[in-house]
Image (cartoon, rainbow, N blue to C red; front, side, top):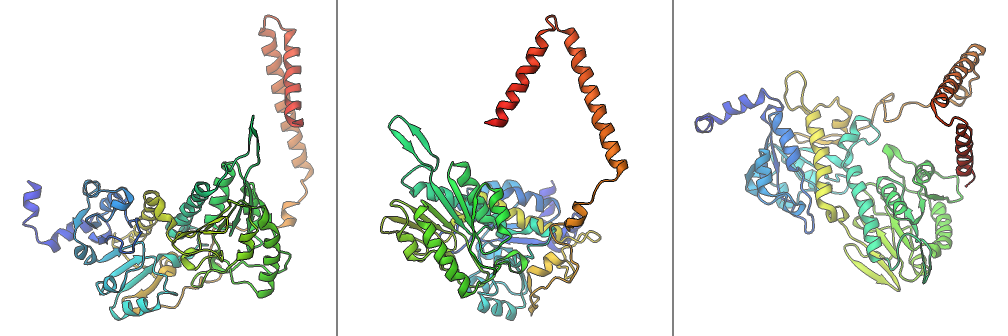
Length: 470
């Protein structure tokens, strides 16, 4: 009955009914990705359901999720409208993974595009969207040091997938196991893996390589990355230089020629020991720096592998051919330009979660309307064009709370305890010791052969001592 009556409702009135549930009945379009080899989709059925619950109307282009394993039926059951590509582009907000091409960009007039736009690189696209009075939310521009922004950080979620997959690709092409083995035929030493760039992708690669039994090493231009690398159980390779590569917003900065010369000397000496080299070093808006030269690849052991996650920006390995797997001598060089799409289902799920979290955060709590709030640091950092007006890059004001609280100073950390605090600690320890001893004696009195308790206690002590020694 409701379905029959709804057919006669005025669409604008129907939207007003929906708006009472939240997000003002915002229509979200999800077109199919047009770039060859791109299998991801901007929204998955699970998150369509969440958006429907707050009143959003989701229009999915037919077949948009097939590359990630999500069918039209799954989207329909989640409450999405299965539409043509043109209908998806007519939505008020269009969510995509990759930037729109020229033909797609012409469809975004007086509407909002939410995607990885890369505005510093795609300047012509931005100019076109400005002329069309569009609003541009570029997800790759998010202020990554902002605590609440981590839930919207598509670069981190996708980099995590890419780092994991890089190890899988390396294991596929490597002509030996990662873990060492002791067999009757002989002993196999564990593989040695170097990860260049200790960002999200690099740390994910280090963790998986370690789990697979490899001996892992990490290298990064940022001195602060040492602690992160070592926390993954890897050894940090350090360039003897006072220069630090820590840039703004959690990214690395471009290093000087002197630093690159020192790094090249160190890496050339080290590369002969590594069976796998995974590179992840990227500088936003610039060509990827070449860190692994051809001469370094040539000294790697026969059957070794390089996996270059910076291939979309030219690559960190000089022998990388973007988009291909090539042989350089006896070394296999993997240069896939869309590693995330090789795990499209997981990558799409995480990307969709980031998009959904962002959209839900843009709901005004008082009016339940969808609002582009310029006072919200997370929203403002990704907002490049607002209704055809180009905005300057976001610079956080001084005093903006970041992701980690201020650490105690060394003086505060080493502040001596007062006499009263020491006395309380002794009383507490004495109380616990008395209670433990009384419990043990009470338990011993209930044992039929109580003299054996001393033997049991002695065996526990010996076992503990053995574990400490070995």
